[in-house]
Image (cartoon, rainbow, N blue to C red):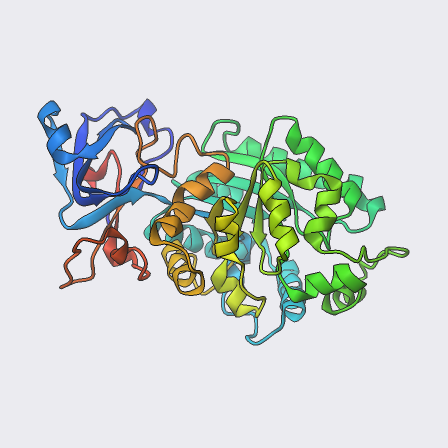
Length: 432
């Protein structure tokens, strides 16, 4: 690949002259594609976006001509588990969701820091090589935080909490808060490149008491959260009857709670009764939604639906009703999930799968892969779009060798372009 993105704080030490980047197409995301477009970058900030012929007369400096390519914002992988990267190829294929969850939990518990670290570094490199600039990292260990702090990636790190027994809520929360504090000590928080939140794993692994506690901590400074939700038929069965693969898994791991009774409703209805959806969040997977569930999410003030089609395929978990979610006006994002259930961390591979699985417009898919994730992760005013005032985290994607781009900028974005066709366009691109 070409140039790596600059560090988040590069503008404090590097002040290159303004550069006007031009290409066959520019995708601002917040506006329609611009043919023969250009982006003016000064330092680490975008100053103007428009047609080259309109911007060029006002620019006397360097012009970077990227030719027959598409310029767009760096991608946003809104749901990852980098700490599970060492499990790539280790989980047997063909497992149902409950079996996969049990096997993954068992192997993850056996991972050491020494075994996990090289795979985390390789996963981050793969993310950068395939054009991702921001991720939503879900972690139960914090293992990836130091590596993320060394990398050029921006991230919302969700420190995951699990405790289905209400009596374990406070100790589980305290342990997660310690991990969050340790993560913040390793990297800037607040408005920095790495930002931290607490997150429940799923409604079937976290008690109502713990959900309320998590909501209270995040709500102190409006930190977004995330939750695996309506991911499989097994989850629906557990909430409807208290039986099925997840009940068996709880018995196996000794996490059954005496006296707990199935609410006889969907997990979405269950969380709505708690008021869970009042908080800003990513609801991840959503393959098992009823019409009523979609309506509940539509009425929620700040819920983004994060779709992970390749992971859902691999686990036979079903398919999210993406068209219904989009028609309801629910914002969409895309995530790869972990290498324990997806073949790669390339968000372009995820876009290609989404294009095959969902009846969505190409522009909506690319918006989900950029602006949708950035907004949900709390970076919506800085990343995910090409617009004045945004950070200059841009990539260019070229057509396959021997293929002309033509009149459709999305044609080269929906076919799963690899690193050979992706290049970073950042303020220090000339030094690459």
